[in-house]
Length: 143
Image (cartoon, rainbow, N blue to C red; front, side, top):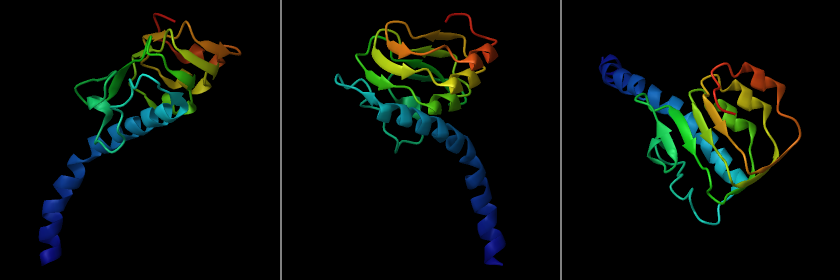
C-alpha cells in the first residue's frame, strides 16, 4: 500500500523535472564548447555545468521555456575551435562569435540549427569550406 502512495507523490516531481533535463543537454553542449576554448579574460567563468540550466550563465540568453536562443561571445578574446555539440542547440536563433581567434573547420552540425536567424562569425581563423548543411538554415537572415 505504501508504494502507490509514494508513486503518487514522486510521479509529479519526476514529470516536473523533464524541462530541466532537456535544458541541461543544452548546458552540456555549451560546456563542451567551453572545454574547446581558451578564455584568458574569463568571460566564460559563469559557465558552471553543475547548475540546473545555462540560462543563468553570462553571454547566454534563453526564452520563456529555458531554451538557449542566443549566444553572445563576440569580441571576447577567446580562441580554440568549435565542435559538433553546438548543433544540439536546436532553439538557437543568434550565434555571435565575431572578432575572436577561433580556428579550424566550421562544424557541419551547425546546419542543424533550423531556428538560426543570425550567425556572425567574421574576424576569426576558420578554414575550409562553408558546410553544405548550411543550405538547411531556412530562417537565416545574416551570415
